[in-house]
Structures are given as structure tokens and as C-alpha cells.
Image 1 (cartoon, rainbow, N blue to C red):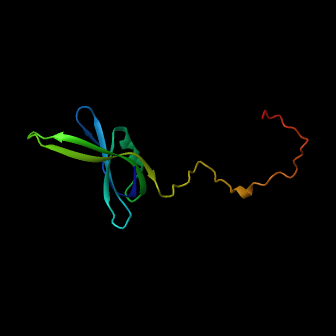
Image 2 (image 1 turned 30 degrees about the vertical axis):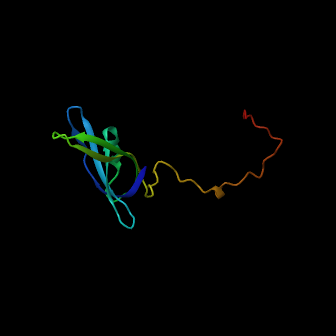
Length: 125
């Protein structure tokens, strides 16, 4: 499943327990008639996916819905849901890399006029 919207908040990575469980939360606001503020959590190594994002960016997040059952000390059964992200994509135009030269349009390449069918090349295919 996927959800898309604009990043409203990115929380810091938090570590829980002795086993080093890590969790980081992000809130995105959907852009529809009735905008929704959706909390998505990234866990363990997926926390680092949020490092290059900031508030205000338009993103698409691939998610899994998680549900669990818990019995409290009084014996009552409770159910909890969470939305867990596993991929995030920037939907805004990514800036061109400075390392790559611009690609000329296809019409800039013209076929060779001086090609002689009798000339053989040594290419193996």
C-alpha cells in the first residue's frame, strides 16, 4: 500500500529497551478534499531513510498495516494498529546531479550520411 502527501513533521530516532530497538515517526498530510494527518513509523534500519527528507516535501511512502492484540492486567483484550513505512520517495522534481552532464535531446543526434555499406567493422555482433 502507499500513502502520499506533504511532510508535516519528522521526529528524531528513538531507541527503546536493552535490545536497541529503533523507531522514527513522520507525519504526512494528504492533499485531498478532507486532508488527513497520517502518522507513519519507520523501524530499525528503515529509520535512516528519513535522513534526507524535510518538512514541506511532497512524498510517497510505501507502507504495511500492522495490528496486534494485547491483554491488560485486568484480562481485557485490546487491539492496536500501526502504519509502518518501508520506502519513501520524493515526488517533487529532484535537482539534477552536478556530476552528470546534461543529456542532449534525441533530435540532436543525426544519422551518418557517409556510411558505406561495403565498409566492414570488426565488432563481434
